[in-house]
Length: 204
Image 1 (cartoon, helix red, strand yellow):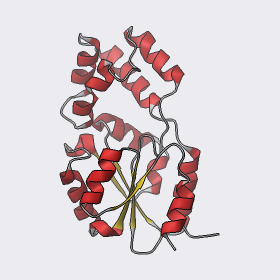
Image 2: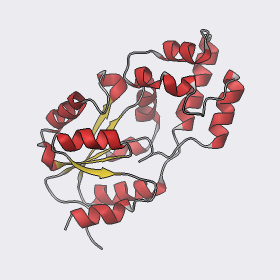
Image 3: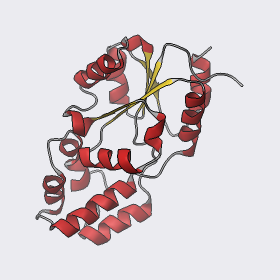
Image 4: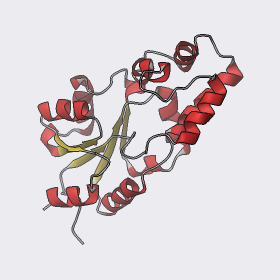
């Protein structure tokens, strides 16, 4: 079987839509029941206010107050945070298989995700997937988010790696373009990609 990794490289993964899949219809229905709002459409307040939440500018209370139009109480806030975390917890088995192989090969693995701080702390404490990574970088904790070049510079410095020695896998074309401009190797993770084949091709 072909190797997926090359010695000396870091493999830097995004989380949402790479390691995780998109929220399922049942997740949006649960949020609908909890809020009375249809939050799935792109123009909904869930998405309109998400950037500040992901960047660490808004606390959970500030974010959900903006989404709802009124401040939730502590119990409802906990419920909304639970539902939000559950919505993004569905994992892509193909990506997990690739991570398993990379780990067995001894590859250097890191993660860079635009994710609210509390959600990232929850996943780090409770989920299994962080075990694949020796470095975890989250926008909400850093106060920086993709595609800002500063977050890529921060990660490269933390990894003690030259950008050209980092393979960045992400589903967002803007993030990919920003990383490429800085010299990172990149893989755009689309819904049809064969990530195993793509990494094997690059490892030759």
